[in-house]
Image (tube, rainbow, N blue to C red):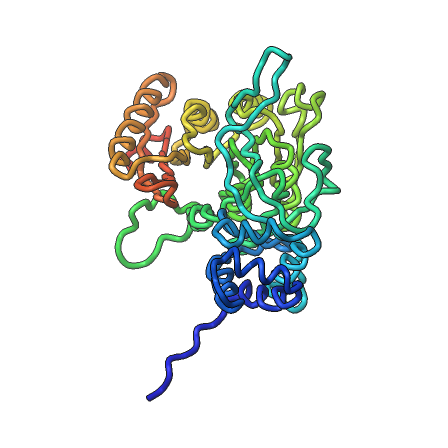
Length: 424
């Protein structure tokens, strides 16, 4: 009878054995004691069983999952080692995980992105305050090996920048200062195919979504929470011009680097004296496909209006509101941005709002109805131009917590009677 195939040992497990063999016997005896075993083989098995089994590579960094090396006997044993002995373990792991021609040089443990962060007291009578982590800074990242830069005296050029490729688009960020969400890959891919040719066969669910690339090149997408360019690059790949708003300077720099890596032209507007200027003055004749305003997104609706006053109407096809747990504070602005560019021509005009939110799985249909009523009310306020809105699709992106989903509500808004009839 054939024997079952031998289970393949993980690279991290393979890194542990030679590292253990390099340690002095006194430490190995201590390990047996800490593991509660009589033999080194048993103690080693306990170490291997408690070692992380998963990892993600963001060149040149390896990111281990939250909780790595926190199960005994790891905490006790690591506390017994000196700095160089721990360094040898991290180097051994990196060597095992590195591809032949691209050595991996940095190792860290993911600790998640806290919703709150501590702010220092303003005077001796105050205590440390908790405030919303608006910039989504990864303050809990546990660094194991390699220089990531300084969190207290940061500079772009002295910090570690890593990258990955999703849907053939490169994303770049500084892990000490900004987050990266792998789970957005599904939504990025959906946007890339949003205006694809209508398939043959059964009637398409949303035929009005097909817009030829030549038409898209004359249109804009607006991203009110641009981050490092999660969705910006999908819109740019479609051929749209993209106007972006982002407060975090590290995210802005990551977006800029990522845009160049993807061969998109990009302009970043960050100087306070420039941000005081009108939008038309700032970007009149701009040829860059991506323009980033490093400022609060509450200025976006005003800037789009200014742009429309100083040139032909700004035809916005998409407004992306990608902020969790809810992007609702910008929904009215996103509606105003979209309808500012609508015309009264006979050609159907319309656009989409992509509203991100965390919603309980049992509450999705209720929330969809609430959003529909909200936009119906806003449409009814527009007396000069007849408008109609419909929540035409609900995309469940990924689970955020048990029975809670990251959801995107696609709201289609049109000013044309012919286009409105499509969504009735």
